[in-house]
Length: 289
Image 1: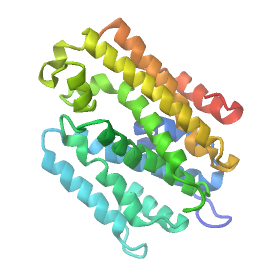
Image 2: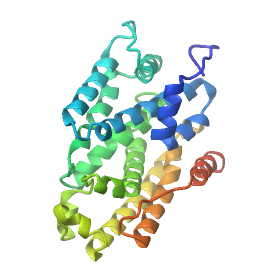
Image 3: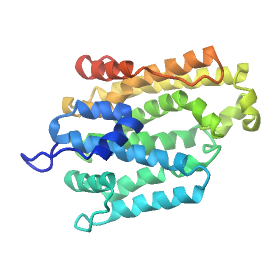
Image 4: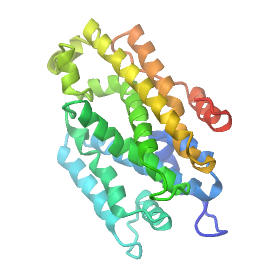
């Protein structure tokens, strides 16, 4: 894995494990990247996974999540020449920021995007959910593009914003049941109200016609976002297309959520590991989204 011109070193096992477990789509996409960028893409995926699991790990002690997120902010803001944190993911992310000219503020905004992870009903309306997708998933797509050589100001952010919206909505639907089981609902409050649904009683309403219609509408939105993301992604240079490979899972995620919902209101959606691999590989080699 690249570390300076002509030099390569292995990726820390903790980075590989975090990326593979927490961000399998970005992990697989990184494996298809040129060797010079592979390690940094794996570290970015591992970083995303670490941030996402903070709220889950600290569910019963919210203050611990805030402490952990603040630790990440401070670790990432440290000068490159400062002493290493000892955390392999944090130290690698700090190094890749210097290599690719990425400002600490841009990476710290990813931490800030997770502040809503502790809220039971985090999004007031569609606009709030849209901002979250752009600030979280969209930012990760954009940073992946930077690692793959896209200049900071060379491409409009439309491609990463639409990728974030599409992938974010696909993941929301795919992971909805576990979130509801934990007492959290990422569906905007205005959407729930329009469907005549009350979050306090949603456990008993997951099989209702209103809830089914609401999820079907979100699925249509995910597919529409994916079409927009595809149009923008085709304008990217070939070498940067690795960044958008996770979009290949948006369709399978939406279909898996629909199948699970059709079988049982509380069934957890699932995608087979081989399907995940084949979709990522097919998008890379044949452009099959």
